[in-house]
Image (tube, rainbow, N blue to C red):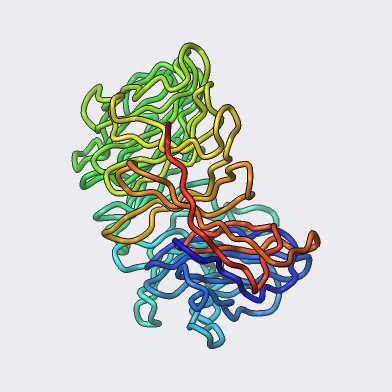
Length: 423
């Protein structure tokens, strides 16, 4: 990973916001006071370009759709088309939000002027765009029907798209894109005799179904798997904790999350079998917390950041066992922290992890590490012949993930690779 990107970025204030990654590209947004800029990058300078968008602000949501990007802005849906102006889609449909893509279809919430905000699907063509069915009923008031889109999150499984409604009925609905194939499969309140107050927390695709977690002050963390039985899902694990799980992430045949069982917030793993949840390792011994963050799967390993109490927050990796969990590199030596962030899997079959970190000498720079978590983290160190304290942060995207840069990178920059490994 040698060299640094440089582009003619417009003087918009604020760092870039990563929107979505797909097909080897990253899409990110710069926001200003009265406008927004949508950019894309394949990790090269030539492949980093600004996408034409309608003038104005108010990006309501985005979703990757093949090699293009569907986004909602200015009260309409638009499809990116390379360096040409975006194509307006779906006629008079007014966007309520973009949901998710699954099985070659994109699902979104829209109002056609007749039914209120409802679930729609599209294959990218007018003929393949249709309303699925009512998921978001509009309650009647003295003012007539009003928009009502309850809080939910969607998980794209292998066979269907699942919608989790934490606050409106504690239900799971799935759809295959047809009205008859859309319906409720699970009701948490009817699942067992446990105390009430549980909420859906997160879900990930797992085998042919979805593994998801719930949490309640009386039940702790409960781990469930959807199934094709009339019950819709079954309980496979439980962790007695006083706070919700965080960062549920699948890696290979395992699902990871962080939890605090009274011995500090640490990394946990579930294998989807009954009582198959356990703490991976007490990284910060005793009651201290290593507080794992940015859980990211690369190959069959999970990468994350953690603080073990001896070093600062650094990059770690695991294969799901205590013996296979270790710090990858002490990038900022000793108790100092390197602030590793923006973790992303890159490289397809030859997978690597890309991230940004600060070694205490050169500021925030892009790094990579091998997928097996063994070896050296490489850094592209960018030095400039001239620098300016007034230069604005510049995005430096080498691999489909965006890093903010603020050290006055100029067109005369030269780069040299350096390395740091774990002690």
